[in-house]
Image (tube, rainbow, N blue to C red; front, side, top):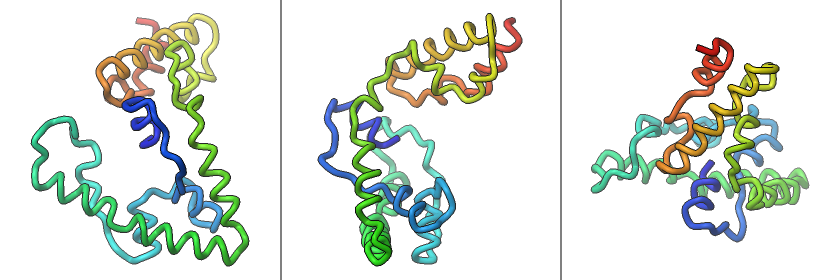
Length: 169
């Protein structure tokens, strides 16, 4: 998600990346392990996620948001070191690097609103008019999200769009 934001904002990609979620998965941690849970697993620390959904576009940032931002990255480098060392011992470091590098393909982040239905959870179960409605709603939401520079779920949740497509009010 972070790469998508960077790419859509700057139309640039980082030169390289090490995805801690990919690395953790290769080491047997729970699938889709989030950063806070990873920091807890590796270092026994609790990271508050109280400002995850804050509006970061509002300036000036509050002291609470600045503190949150600092805490939110405090364990990234130590996590990288710990994960990379563990992966190297298991001869899996190259796997993590290759899988992480795949995330840097701009094709993954060039959003075509007409294809937004592919990102709509539950849409694959819809057929006929219901699927057509879901496709239109997903395209509308994607366009709104891009235009307003907001996450698509802030425009309308997947479940709301699926419900509308199913009921066809």
